[in-house]
Amino acid sequence: MTTTSLAPAVSTLTIGVRRGGIELLQFMRDKTSLIFTFFFPAMLLLLFGAIFTDSYDLPGLSAAQVFTSSMIAYGVISTSFITMGVGIATDREDGTLKRLRGTPVTATAYFLGKLILVAALTAGEVVVLLAVGVLVFDMPLPSEAGRWVTFAWLFVLSVTSCGLLGIAASALVRNSRTAGAVLNVPVVALQFLSGVFIHPITQLPDWMITFASVFPVKWMAQGFRSVFLPDAATTFEAGGAWEHGRIALVLGAWCVVGLVLCLTTFRWTSRRD
Image (tube, rainbow, N blue to C red; front, side, top):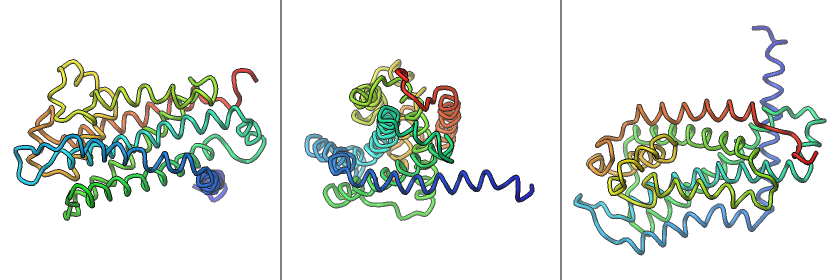
């Protein structure tokens, strides 16, 4: 491959990274969004941890620790999916996308910038959730390197799949004022169906578990539990195992689905325009 053929890809990457920096600066200036993004999942975790104080039949495992690991999946999807969808809907409505279309910022560079934003926000949110889990609920952090490797690829696939789906979902939003409400409906529903707010997931009817297994949230929550909970906790999973291979396949498939939906549904302008 020649230097000339590499130039467009390098240019897109550079513009995307710069766009990501701009997105971060703009987001940090909005104190309300900043506080809501970082502390709402942590507040839910504190509430769930205080309400459900039962211990499992495993030494040292409490409901609060289970909720801490599961809530990371909620933090990922709420930040990646909702923030992405609302942000793009707002950019489309206020004319930001229309202005960017006349610049060297391609759709790919714009998507990359948004993904950098949600990845950075999600990482910060995970840190806050883990801090609550460790400091308030005495959840031990894993000492094995392999568990952190699992966390790394799970985090990347989760943010990418949810981010791409957020981009695609923004096409369904009529205006930015209703974007948050519209996008929150599937997110909240999937938290209950996927065993994030209800554990063990085997308490749910079989048809609900089967339905939830089609979507990424169930596998994200299961994957994060595999990182922070002892292996004996697999007895509370629907499949009786962590199923890392299946988790990777499902999340990878949703990354592909999300990318295809982005390419086919993304619009630079609103329907009125």
